Image (cartoon, one colour):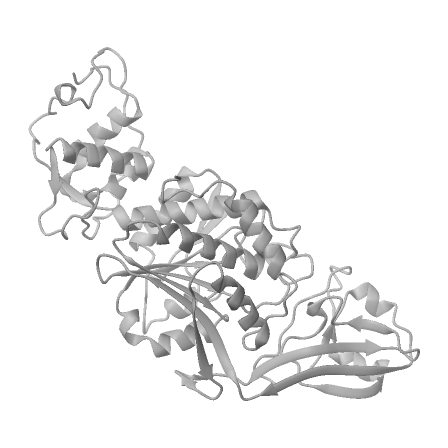
Length: 463
C-alpha cells in the first residue's frame, strides 16, 4: 500500500477523468448544477450536503435567490442560433434573469461580452448580486453578426431556494482541526474550479485511510458566499481550526505557488514553504485580501491560519476565466504533483514536534545502537546525517520542521530519524508538549525559524 502521505499510483489520471466528467455541468453559486456536482462527489467521499435557505443573513451578506437554467440562445432572422448555451455554458452570463424578446443588434450589443485581446475565446462573466442578463461569445463571432433583428431567450429561474454546500469531517485524536476548502461554483472551467475539487477529493480519500492527530474538515462550497455562510453557521468548529489550505487552480502546467496566511508566519506557511522549496521551482506570495476564500478565513474577525495552494495563481494564466480553461489545459501529472505537495504539507502539520536529546553531552554512540555505519573516514549518508541534525537541535526549542529547514533536508527524513532516535531511548518529547501519538509526534509552537545553511561535510564515523 502507498504511504498515507504519498499519492496512490494512477491518481493523476483518475483526477483528470473526474475533471472531464464534471466539466460540462453548468454550476453556479446555487442551483441544480451545484447539487449534481456534489452528488457525484458523494459517490467518491461521504460528503454531507447542507441547504441554506435564500434570504438567510450571514454576517453582512444575504444568501441569494436560487438560479437554475434550462436553455438560452440568440437566434437570427432565419431562426439559426448564433449564440447557443447548449454548445458551451459560458455563453450565458451566470445568474442571468429570464429573458424572452426580439431586439436589434444595436439593442443587443450592451448585453454581449467578448475579449477583444483574445478574439477566439469565450469569457466567463457573472451577475450574482445584480439582476441583469447577458451573453458571452468570441470577439470574432461578434464581429461576424450582421445587422438585423434577433430573438433572445434565457430560459432560467431566479427565485427563493437554497444555497448548497458539501462538508466532510474526518475525526482525529485531538479536537484540533485542519481545514481544506475549495470552490465548486464555476461552470465549465477546468483548472479554476474542477482541478481543486479533484485534488480535495483525492486528498480526503488518502487521509481517511491514515491515522490522524488533527480532525480533517473538507468544504466544497460556492466561492465567497459559501465560506461566509459556513463561517456564520459554524462558530464552534471555527474555534478548533489550527491550520488550513484553500485548494484551487491545481491542474495547469505552471509551477506550484503558495499564498501565505494573513499572519504570514503560521506553521502552515512555514510547512508549505519548506515543501515547495524541496520540490524545485515554486513561488511564495504574501497575503493580499483578494483571491479565493482565504480572504474570508483570514478576515480580521477570524484571522485563521489558512493559506492558498495553487499552481499558476488566479488571473495570471491567459486561459483564466475563458473557454480555454478546458480539460485539455489540465494535466494529469500536474494534478498528481499538486496532490503530492498537499499531502506533504499535511505530513508536516500532523507530525511537527519538539524533542529533547536525552544524551546531550557530546554525540551518543549510534553504531552500537544499530543506527550508524561502522566504516569511518567518509561523510555520513543522508539518514545518518539526519540523525546528527536531530540530536544536535533537539533542545526543546526547535521542532522537526525547524531542523528540516536548517538542515535543508526533507521533513520525512528528519521525522524518520527522530522516530529512530526515540526508539533507541535517545529522544523524548519536550516538556509541556501534548501526549505522543503513533510514531511519536507531540507538538508545541515552533520557535522562529533558524538560519538556513547547508550542513558541513564531516569525515568521522559515529560507530
